[in-house]
Structures are given as structure tokens and as C-alpha cells.
Image (cartoon, rainbow, N blue to C red; front, side, top):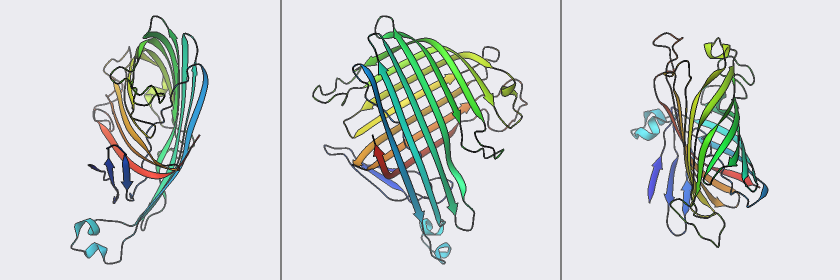
Length: 312
């Protein structure tokens, strides 16, 4: 039995208990903040197109009494009444040919939170789209072209919709391995069979923002690296780990690193539980002064949730 608890800047009352045995059982209590589900992973078709997605709604509530701040129990004394909700949608579109393949992924998140005495504020806000086209050389090797876009529904800084927007394209070389460590069960397609993919190439990206940022005055071009490992344990439980790196040819010390990981478990037909992790670090660009906030430090977020979902 593994007891995994996450505490945010608001009061948190969520504890997720994972029982990873013959029948994976997962239960969870409420959290004062809504977390973001792990990325959707879709089993690839043998040939042609395959589409899958998941839509979910999540709500949490923490209630306290008027005398709770005077309680001798610290967990109650430190709590604040709160409400939070999150809408989430993941969609994956895959295509497989004789010696070509393509993956496209869409991820939407929007959620709000209200702590007692305060107004509703955005707590989750994300629009992410990415795609990749691969052409096989000699398996497992391939050349690729990739593209992507990241933005939010509304900026917390400028209060403008879709601000900022970052778009990117890239090309390079990579390798894709199936059943690298785990062979899986032949009777159940993709169950237990792991997947490892790495890419190394050149990326060009452009940023548009209502803020006065030096990056939006130019197109950033430089080397990129991508590594992802997927492990579907069975039809109801899967996890992944992903690492991305990018820097500029004109400023190699301006290094950006993103680490994401997630575990998804189907508790029931319309109920799923997710644990996710996200960490980001960006080195200070040479055209910004020392001490500029937000650079040269790791920022992490760990989330856990359970909610109503519909999978198609």
C-alpha cells in the first residue's frame, strides 16, 4: 500500500491511497485545489486512423466551522474553507502507415477556486496542442517533423484571452522502441507493453505576448531533445515519464527544461483517478538583467484528483 499526499498553497484535505495488487483499488478524499489529469495515452492502431479522448469534470469542497481556527488539532486549525472546479478534455489522433506514422494531441484545462472570504480566481488554465510526423529509416530509427502550440484561455498578468501564445516547429532524428523492457500480454493489445521514444533535432519557436518580453521580438532557433517512456500496466492503469530540453544557437546558456509524469487509473466506468507531476526550469537569457524573477530555479507542481470522466 502506497500513501501519496499532496499539499498546495491552499488548505488540502486530499489523500490518495493506491493499492497496486492483483486488483488495483484506488480511493481518494477531497482536495482544496483541483489538480490537472495526466496526459492521455492512446494505443496505436495497426494501420490507418485511430481517435480517442476523455472529458472530465472535477469538483472539491473544504468546509470549516467558525471555531476551527482555535482548534487544538493543527490540521483543522490550518484549514480554510474553499470550493474548486475543473473542466478537462484530452484528445488523441493517431495515424499509422507502412513506413510512416503521425501523432496529434490536444489538451484543454480550465478551473477556478474560491477560498472563504475571497473571490473566484483561475486555478488551472491550459491550452496545449502538439503533433509529430515520422518516416521510418531502418527501424527503430526515423526522421521526424513536429509542431506545437501553447497558450491559456486568459492571462493572469494582462487579463487578455489567449495571451501569451507560443508556436513551434522542429525536425530531426529519433528512435521508437516497443516492448523494450516488458513484452506485454499478446491476448490484450498494448496491455503491459512499454514504449520508449527519443528525438534530437532543431526547433524554431515564436512567442506573442501582451507583456514586453525580449523573446517575442525574434524567432528562437536551437537544438531540442525529447524523451518519453510509456507503461500501460493493464487496460485500467498506465503511467508515463517525459523530458524536454531546448536552447538557442545564439544563447546556448538560455536553456529550458520541462519534466512531466503522470499515472491514470480507471476506478469505474465513469470515474478515474490521476496523479501528475510537472517541473520547469529556464536559465536566464543573456539580454535580461541578473535577478530577473522566474529564471534559474526549478518550479514544481504535484497534483492528484478523482472525478467523473467520459472516455470515447
